Amino acid sequence: MKKSEDQPFSYPVKVGHISANPVTVKIAADAAECRLLAGQWDVLEVKGFAAEFEIRRWKKDGVRLKGRVATEIVQTCVVTLEPVASTIDEPIDAIFVPEGSKLARAPLSDTGEMLLDPDGPDSPEIFHGDTIDVGAVAAEYAAMAIDPYPRKDGAAFSAHVESTEADDAKPSPFAALKDWKKS
Image (cartoon, rainbow, N blue to C red; front, side):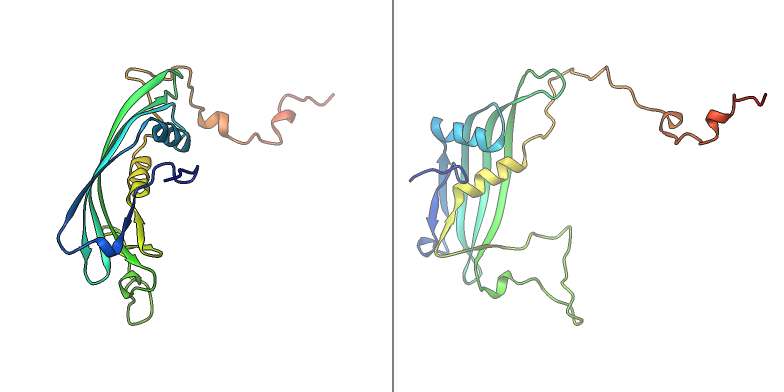
């Protein structure tokens, strides 16, 4: 399959081939795909990328992906600008429904307001056509787990000085007249 800048890691799964019995899918990126992922994530290097899913039907026409994604990346320390290696191991639990499905609509109250529970489960994702790209899902979950401010162990930004309230206060327009004497 041809890789693009938008989807450097792709593994399409036909929804029609998914049954009620769970199927385990293991995917891993090769060296070229790791380089493309590093460029997309703006990191120095992706040393390895792999995911394992259990794919099964969800309700009537939905699909549930449950599993883990693991990757090793190298980023630049925000303090010392040296390379910092980190490991990402994230759980994946996503539900997909086809466009137009009743399951994709958020529940409404009697007044027509949308009811959202911030601590509740995520709303199902919508897929178009008959394919879900589980490689892109794995890459998205890994990207969300990347530390935006990586720091090497023991690195501290010592040159940082906080300003005081006196420094931040707006000067009085009469401060210049304070030392002025009338002759």
